[in-house]
Image (cartoon, rainbow, N blue to C red; front, side, top):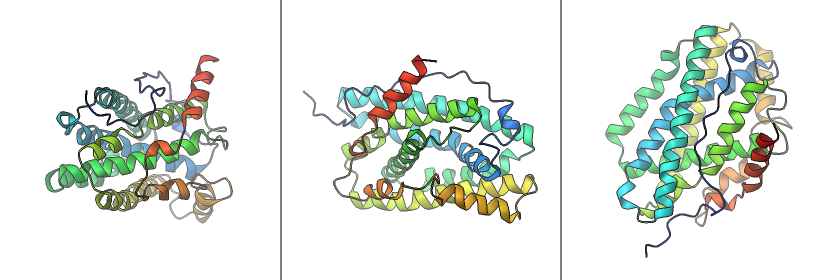
Length: 277
């Protein structure tokens, strides 16, 4: 009997969903409560997803033959399925956004595409997987924030709120898959921590690159009120990053595992909400 390599709770199924959401009208305006910076921030995040999701799939799939645990093997397959749908939906999102608002998708994606091409050629597969485990933790922390008590998307356009909450739930469901694969193939703590430092820097860089392009095209790049509102949106009392430092820093503990941050109830609450609507 093979040794267990998966530490995802048994009652957390990782399952592919196919949301059918019409976001065309929402993307024409400031869909995040008419907040210019917040809308630009989430739109810029979306720009990073298609290339990022493909990278994550590839880095985990590279080690499929090294995994002997049937449970983790199945979770890997479901991870690919979820990430593939995320890629598809955010590619559609990004193309609609740029077509309707005059943004340059190639200018937005180009730096990330070139860097990922370099990483693929020059960085060992194990380090690429460490990067995936790190970014998966970042997205899981943000997903928990999005679905937590603050109800981040309460005043967002309903279609956009549904899209981001769906994505957040699936990020929580599969948040330990890359981590468990990394641990199973003998990844080191030192490499994992270094990957988180790099990933934090580059994800922040990529989002701010997108925000700068979006605000520039909207003629608001040098609007101090927009940037001031952005600081409040990120770091204010109800800011999107408020309360995320501790769960972020937990990743650097030697005994860390993503499911020590138990988000099962948030997943259940979201599913119950879907059934009632």
